[in-house]
Each structure stands twice: as structure tokens, then as C-alpha cells.
Image 1 (cartoon, helix red, strand yellow):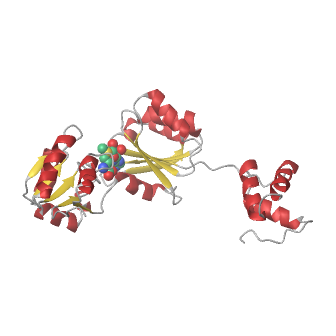
Image 2 (cartoon, rainbow, N blue to C red; image 1 turned 30 degrees about the horizontal axis):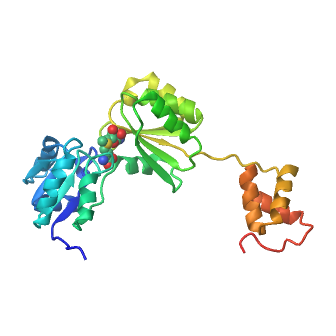
Image 3 (cartoon, rainbow, N blue to C red; image 1 turned 90 degrees about the horizontal axis):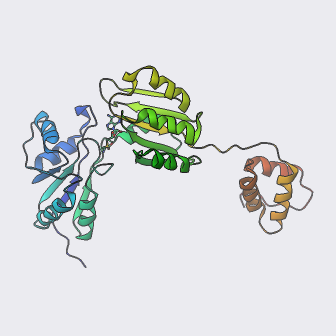
Length: 291
Ligand code: SAM
């Protein structure tokens, strides 16, 4: 068995705007660790000063993460407690730190995550389009072709889709969403969450584009885009073609399975097809859908 070192890496989320959103536990950890690995020392110092915390900081950002993480592992192996913070929100979520965390797991060093602010989840919670299933896609690619390809590939994604975006590209990105996904798809822009000019606005993609174009102050600051998932059209009409498929499949599968496959092939409601088959049943289908 690998040796378990005493050092611990704490992953500490910090506020995404409103400083009161830091947790008591985060402050305790930042006060008591041996050192803080910060994405940007100056930025984190402002936070620490606000809470009257003095501690040793070292910088670890995207550029130096590989080298710095080796040094940090050595410190952890000596038994040090280290806090990892990014400029805002949860480290790792489109922020540096994953190389270090992977190495901690490799060297059997304890990693303790603290819950806290994350723009994607906070935006999602207020979007009104959450359906229990979502995918987080980080920043939309800056190159138009790559962005359009990605959006096109997500056209029929049924989960709610979350993107981070900047004010420089938001208009282009929303335009691409109207073209590659659907101009009538419901989209929410959650901007400057927890800050003075916080706004959460939802409409069809094309209306969002017009709304943003009307006033440049509507797309200043930081923002999250939430896109409603694809809703496959389910017809209530059971055609002869659908029934033909069903009866062929029924020769090979259970009632439940034959209904399910047919509904997928013909994009009809599973329940409607089931009811139709039962109502017009002239063979010996005595199973239930749920057997
Ligand atoms: N680690 C962070 C988190 O947990 O959300 C994300 C860091 S990422 C480099 C920064 C992006 O997060 C911004 O460009 C924006 O898309 C989003 N973001 C951060 N703070 C935000 C806020 N207060 N309101 C809306 N979006 C925010």
C-alpha cells in the first residue's frame, strides 16, 4: 500500500462578486493553512486583507502550474497544509489546479474540497430552465468555425447547456446559437451575478440577440449563458407506419421494449403508443408496460 502523507490540499472557493459569499469554513482554512496557492497573488491579497487574514501566498496559474505543482507536492509530502484558490469561484472550474490535484491523488495526498460559489451553478439555479440534467461546456471557443461546430453538435442535446462567455464575444456567440442551434430556443443570460448590476434575462435566442443589440450595457461584465435542452417533437398521432413498425418489433421483443423502440424510431410518445396498442388490442398482449 502507498504511504499516506499527512499534508492536505484544500480546494477553497472564493466569491464571484459579493465578498459576503465566502464561507466561515473557507476563512478558517485560509487563516490556518501553511500556505495559499493562488491564481493571482494581488487578487487574493485583496480578499485576505478584507477579512484581515495574513498568510503566505505563492502564485500558481495556467502558465506555471506544471512546475509549481511539483514544488507544492514536495511541501505536501513534508506534511504541509495548502489551500488552493483561484481569482473567483471554485478553483478548477475553468481555472488552474487540476494538474496539482491529479498529482495529489497519484501521491496519495489528501484533497479536501470546500463547497462554495460557482458562477455556472449559481446562474443555473436562477435560470428557470433547469430540468435536473445539465452539461457544463466552459467557455465557447473563440474561433468562429470551432464555435459553430461545437454548437451544431449540441443542437439535439436534451440536457440544459451552460457556457461561460465574455462581453467581447457574446453578440457573435448568441448569433451563432440562433443559427446553429435554434433561433427559438430559450436562452438565459445571467450577468454580474452577486454584483451591483446583476441581471438575469431569458427569452428566445433571437430575442436575446435583439435585446443585447439594443443596449451595450446589457452585455458588460461577466456572464453565463444557459440554453434550454432540445425537446424532441412527440406527435400524438399514431400512424399506420408506426403501428407496422411496432407489430414487426413485437415479434421479437416484449411489449415494453417494442413500444420503446417504436416510439424512438417514429418520435411518438411512448405512453400514447402504449395506450393505442392496448385500446385497439386484438392480439394477446397482456403484459403491462412495466413488467
Ligand atoms: N471558477 C469560476 C467559477 O467557479 O465560476 C469561473 C472562472 S472563469 C475564468 C470566469 C468566467 O466565469 C467569467 O468569464 C464568466 O463567464 C463566469 N463568471 C464569473 N463570475 C461571474 C459573475 N459574477 N456573474 C456571471 N458570470 C460570472
